[in-house]
Amino acid sequence: MAYSFIEMLEYTFMRNAIYAGLLAAIAFGIIGTYVVVKRIVFITGGIAHASFGGVGLAFYLGWDPVFGPIVGAAIFALSSALGIGILSRETLEREETTIGIIWAVGMAMGAFFMRQTPGYAFSPASYLFGNILMLKKMDIYLLLCLIIVILVSTILLYHKMQSTAFDEEFSMVVGVHTMFLHLYLLCLVALTIVFLIKFMGVILVLAMLTIPASLVGKFTHDMRKIMFFSTILSAVFVLTGLWSAYVWDFEVGATIVLEAAGVYLVVVFLKKLVSVVRSREEKSERAIVSG
Image 1: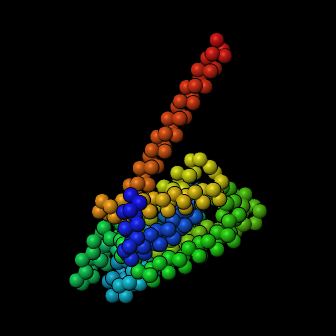
Image 2: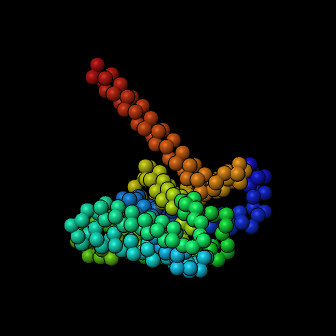
Image 3: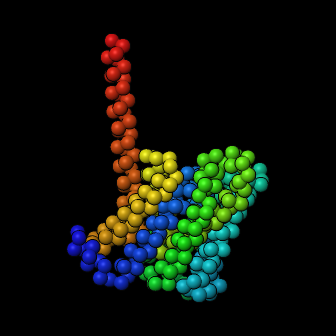
């Protein structure tokens, strides 16, 4: 195992994938914590799928094939994030209805523009799972910029993020601009999706924004601890996924998702089993005492 991992590092594309994966782990840990604690996983899914409309539009308009899809996805993702955030609070429309509409429209527009693009054969797999093995140094630098923005925002806004995540009404009472903060954080979620979707795909991004933080959240409710340990967990999933894909020639994105989901299911099962055993032991103790 150790030899194969060292051998993997001899390839530039694998080193780039590891660098990007470790940077992505920071985004998964921090932004994923907010997504899970705030319970906006469905909103995140809506933003992610709506961004597909921007990808399709970029190809249809003939924008630069490297940066064009990112710009198009960013426009749609940020617009959908702001739209969901504003419409769900300022109208009588239920939030899930708004998200569902934006989700469906974004995907439909993406499919429409892809279909109308002359001579372009689009593979859904590239959108669903990305291709982390095709990263260039510029891609890593862009991802590093995103991580810096996320880290600075978290340091400056942590206490407000924490208060709005757990008790938004109290935050409003004490003077926190919850609406602005909510929209800003949704925009960070949107940018995280956009910067990672090209390389890791929508399925991996959604899974990794949810699974690690949810897993750590089963053992602690401290946001700092959730951010820290879910970042470590994300890094482990990415590295083991890359290694598994290299050794057995698996699809990288799908491998990382399946590993993360597998660990999550095992932990949930074991935690449930422990809970049942403890419950039976307590019942037995009460029966002995009462007897």
